Image 1: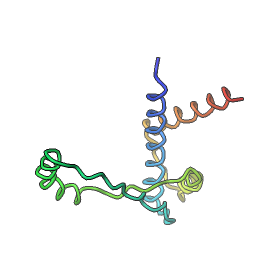
Image 2: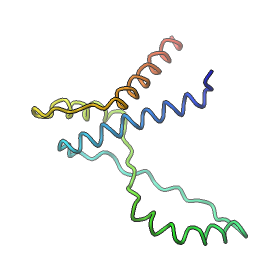
Image 3: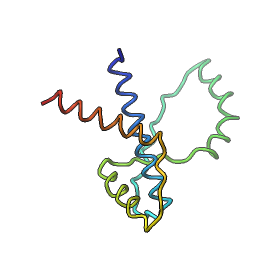
Image 4: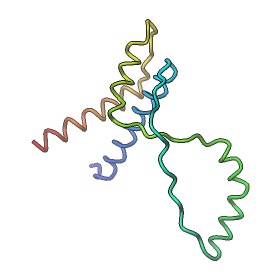
Length: 121
């Protein structure tokens, strides 16, 4: 049986998959509204002693590559899902292929929400 933590992690992952696909697909179809600001970066606590020395030596080479390759993550509010979905649905005659991984993630998210509401009622 799955633990509560693993169920929650799967739910978060599925929600991220749905949000990511909606955002990238809508943007590729010309959606121009802002999708929210990037979340603020969390400041890490300062390492001390040997841990600091190891982190400094290993991160110097990796930081240059990471800064070039990393893209900012944006927060997509649940209230944005409907406008994005409507924009994709009204794609001016374009056929949008919905991938199987998106369908599966959406089914899991919806079924968990419905099951949660039934148990709370």
